[in-house]
Length: 173
Image (cartoon, rainbow, N blue to C red; front, side, top):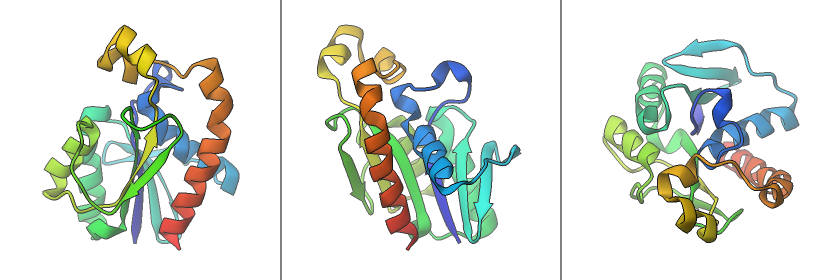
């Protein structure tokens, strides 16, 4: 059993914001694979199951995603190494992907919540770089992560999301 988790905030107002990169990655993945999201919720998350893999988008807001992740992990007896977290990282260059088997939260509140609820930092994560230093300096960190991608950035998203899809497939293989 595997669990693929996209981080984000629920609600249309957060569509195409940097913090919703995880949701965006899962939506792109399912579109490419021809899978429709079920309109089901469980453990405060929208989810679908494909074979022995659950894909979830926690609906608890970004800073409390760990609650949903732990509920799925515990109920389905999923091992930590079989959980893949997909989240944004404003310290990585825009579009750069970074995969790690374990590690600190690095200032990411969603990862902090996950570490707290799982009781460990030993779970794989794929960070999607969302850096735009000029904009971040201008509006501050909180407004930056909740800001929408610029038009130029949006044009690059399909390529970045295709790379993310390949990384998800590698993890599942």
